[in-house]
Image 1 (spheres, rainbow, N blue to C red):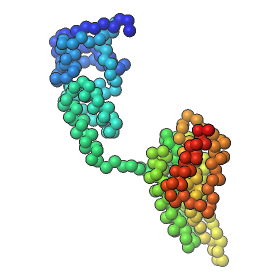
Image 2 (image 1 turned 180 degrees about the vertical axis):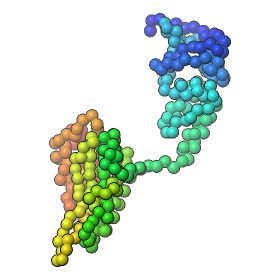
Image 3 (image 1 turned 90 degrees about the vertical axis):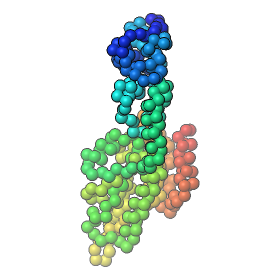
Image 4 (image 1 turned 135 degrees about the horizontal axis):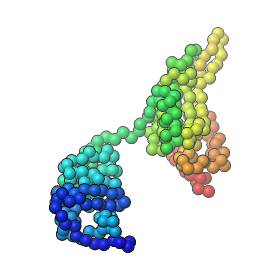
Length: 288
């Protein structure tokens, strides 16, 4: 670019310099930049030429995302480290580039410690209010599957196999949340809804399907609550919400129609192979 020149930076430790690191601007002293034996000391102790623009900004062709942290480490000898492994590795790359060896050692130790820490694979929020539910639905970048499962909402006696079916619904929820946790947000509603067992499926913040698992049946003398376990339909709707992963566009209506009705009440997806086959079928149709 016109106006760029190479020059040697000289001055006492209190002299301020202007740095443009990948588009982020920093203002610091030569004393800070030369505090440790790093590449920055070589650049600003007069031993190397540096590139400057017409306004006197010293140009460094690196990402500026972590340069402020590198400067703070030179100033103070310590900094708060990022909490994720990816950010730690990005900071480590910058520390190695600038040859800030003490920071390299600090970040490598944090990465090693993180590698020996058990990371939670699946997190399932518990909804405690309607406001909280709406916040989750509107802010989630993933499709959402919500399960209401509250045995105590019932005012009638349960049929003989209802307790078993309640447990089966909970077990299926756990299985699905483990399998699809990176693609779907699974939440549990445990607060006072009149529903006993009900699945809700959301895409782009709106409800797209519901599977209610309870009904009232009449005995000889009184009403009973029956809890069902429509496993195949729950699987089907969970796979359908995957079509809403792209926030920028709605799923193709033809694809939605083609994938509905694939499951019937007599079939259950018990194996991973069956689920993978269904997912592959949807992906092939999506690409057509």
